[in-house]
Every structure is written in C-alpha cells, then in structure tokens.
Length: 86
Image (tube, rainbow, N blue to C red; front, top):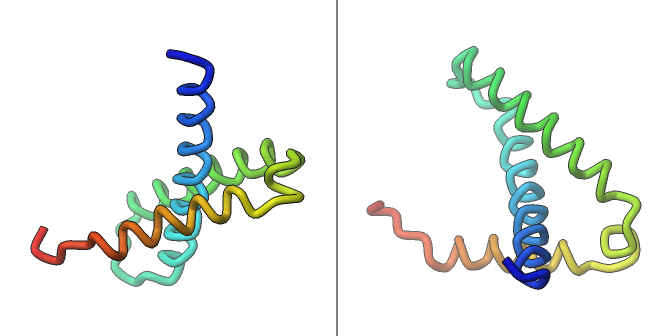
C-alpha cells in the first residue's frame, strides 16, 4: 500500500468513526435495544471517543472543516443513494 493509500484509508476511517459516533448518540434513547446491543453501543462509543481524543489536537480537526466536509459528503451520498427495498 502506498503512503497516499494509507492516508486515504486513515481519513476514511476517521470520517466513518465520526458518523458512527453520531448514529450511536442517536440510539441512546432507543427503547428496543437489548442488553447486549447496549453493551456493544457503549464499547463502540468509547472507541470512537478515544479516536476523537487522539485526533482532536491535530490542525485538520481544530482549524479546518476538512473532516466535517468529508463526513457530510458520505452522509449525503448515503441519503441520495438509499434504497428502501434493500
């Protein structure tokens, strides 16, 4: 894997973790979560928050909207391409 491919993968991972964290936050009041699902949600939330803390001091996160814009584009793509029959 080239350095560029590694950087792209790490940026994609960060954006997906941000989107996952938002979705997990939306689930916090969901009444149909089993105890196992709640435990998994809590573990994933903790993992996302650890990643956020590690990346939070970087220039790209503090001073730009780069990752926010990428995450929004991923979300928009999902919304536009959503197929309710799947």
